[in-house]
Image 1: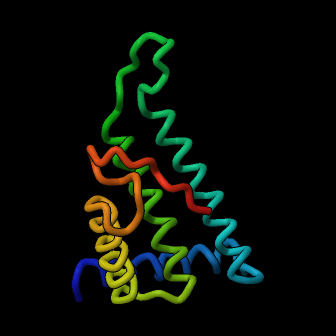
Image 2: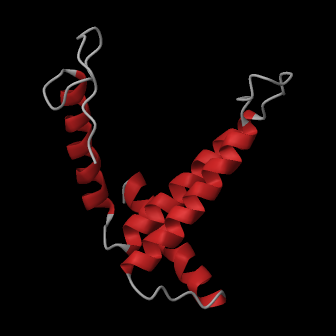
Image 3: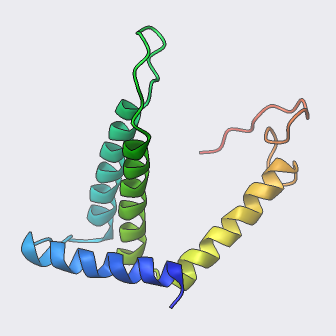
Length: 127
């Protein structure tokens, strides 16, 4: 078992425990995604509170271990949503590589305007 497969399996196991102990039953994929989006947003908020982003205040000391923990929490909810949406390690890996290729193409100016540095192009807004 590779590392991504283990992460997906462990996340599936954890969710089974949570679902049983907390009687979690998402009515449909939309509700499941909404709940995971809210959880991810909450974790992003916790991450933001951990960083010194308020330029109008005195500097705060950053707890980098907590920053890492919040990033992992975001990853937990993201992986869980993908798994509950029917993805396994192989499909997550493939989706990642597909998107990575698109992101490289964007940076090379092939996919969409406004990504390539020093191109002078304006970013094309997309819905």
